[in-house]
Amino acid sequence: MPRLSSTEQTEFLETPGVLMRISCVREDGSPLVTPIWFKHGDDAIWFTPRAQSEWFRCLKRDPRVALCIDEQNLPYRKVIVEGAAELVHDLGEDDLWRDLYRDIARRYIPENAAEAYVQNTIDQARALYRVKLADAVVKSWRMPVEGEPQTGIWHQRYYAPGTKYSAD
Image (cartoon, rainbow, N blue to C red; front, side, top):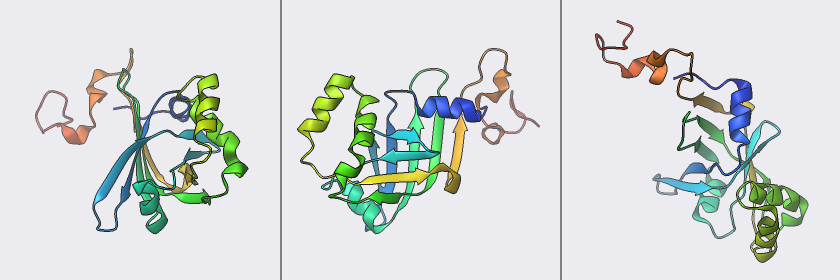
């Protein structure tokens, strides 16, 4: 599958309504995956757990994450980020970054509803994390578009030798 260009990746990561799945590690070593809202900006992925969320406890103990951002419709764009989540603002510092929280909410719900959501949950302490893309392993891909070879639907490693689209 073709990789997203830098422009395509930025455009995709800034598409409203696309959810992110964050994977982190529980204390017993088992994985935890949670779908969440996010925002892309300043070459980072920003997200905010509530104080009572299990994945916040996981990140406080172990910052390693894998982020999966993808879409259900063609061209099936996908971005996978593996790295460390950096705690930018801990609980109780919400007022310092509330405008960013509003921006995150507006990516998923209409502006007037986003403000109501922020006001209705303002008493729920949140932390703010980011994963800097420059410090992470970032993989991206999409389906071939018109004019691109359709043999690129899968990566070559998935084609058994001697089959229709294999390089052998």
